[in-house]
Image 1: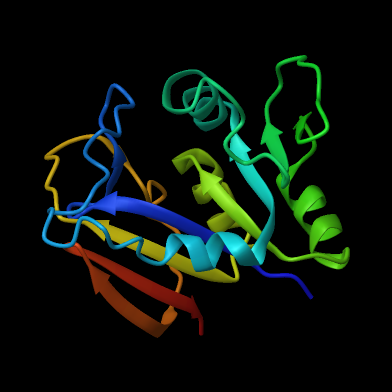
Image 2: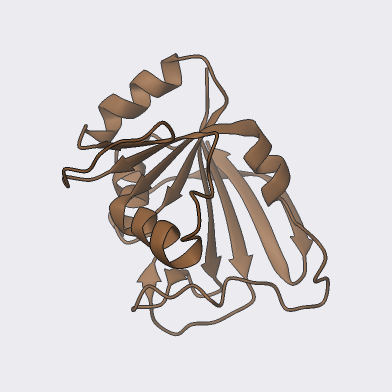
Length: 176
């Protein structure tokens, strides 16, 4: 069965973006600037991407406006907006639990939960994340959009692996 993987970066103090949504701080400390880190190997195992509309809009209009950066993989954008789907991007208002259960039972690679925080926290509450891959960026923002917003949900995890590169530390956990 396919795995639902949260692969996301956060500041040392737990934020995935500035309050304004800015993410220009998502980089290492420059000590190993040519190191690609864990992303290429992770991305190779993924064939489906789940993201909310805010994350989609930022990726499509601000970060990579020239072309859809995840071309060749199926992206599901969770939104209530009535937008035209394409070959690579499906805009849907289906409930996440229904969509993920269907995707997990289909053939394919891992399913990447790309963001944002609202999607992550809903999936955490529904207990639908199989693996947590958190890249801790060597930056303290002080304020911003918190990765884990629902403080009432407890999730016990088991450390699977760690790795560091360019000042970034990747932590991989699975539910206990």
